[in-house]
Length: 420
Image (cartoon, rainbow, N blue to C red; front, side, top):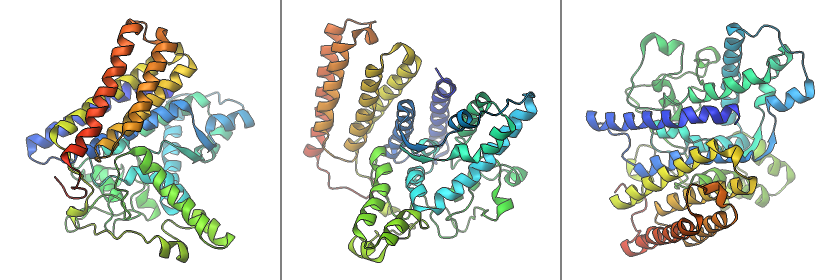
């Protein structure tokens, strides 16, 4: 089990506890920031998708610190005291500011980061919306100074998840401004501005832990006269985290294929975020969105039973993910792939059902994977009788999925964009 997986075993229950506290506090105070629970399920599902694809180590071009260390092979630094750990943390945060800022400035980089901003809500689950598909990562390049100093890979590998998970707490609307800390650290108030699509708030407050924005001219204070409205200027209108993540990249590829001239084809990916060739923009115009109109928020109607079932499926996925992390080393690689696929398909089915979409083909795949896992790898589930429980579980998944799939057709799915 690697450092990131150990960190996850601590982070997952901690995040669940903090989210439960935020939800309960909102109910107690009469300021519920979880009104759209389908959106919260989508956000948490996105985090689980990230964990799964991290485990599969899928990427196209990933320049990591570990990989660069195998090329450079620097002389390890003798001193490895607390001062070095603090230096690594501060440099990780400094480079994170610039990586984050560039992710907003370039279309291709924005395609990978956009999912984090796709929610039209702002609560702790939103922090879990992370880009799972590693099309391109250059974090290692930004950490190259540490490598040249001889900072061991183990220190960077330990600091990285700590730095990432410390960005969780400030995704909330329940904490106001924090006095003098606003000049040093990134706070909930500052990050609300960052997630807002009000014109004055766009492309502001890129800091992750320390408030580098005040040094580099990208700071914007949250104003009572201009309450933040959350989301992205071209809404995705989906709860499926995999579809959300692929949609913007798909639009870039479509624009590049359709537009004339190689210059424009390259500019689609290399230009500033939002730029589109005229011919592509005319054929597929960008949807207009009034950020001040709450009725335009994406919130298909879901009866209470479907929301409850959505949470049940999500908690089952959390449990299965934790099981896989704990028993990864004992699980054969083909079985790992099967369980990962089952998790991702369950996330897809769950979120698609929350949009009143049929998931019959996904359910068929899920049932097939469950049957195959029990038939080929009974030792993975050795604590039960595979011959009995495997059949029952497969039938249960098929039956429950059919209920979740067919119910929308019986109830109707006309309410698509208004709050129910």
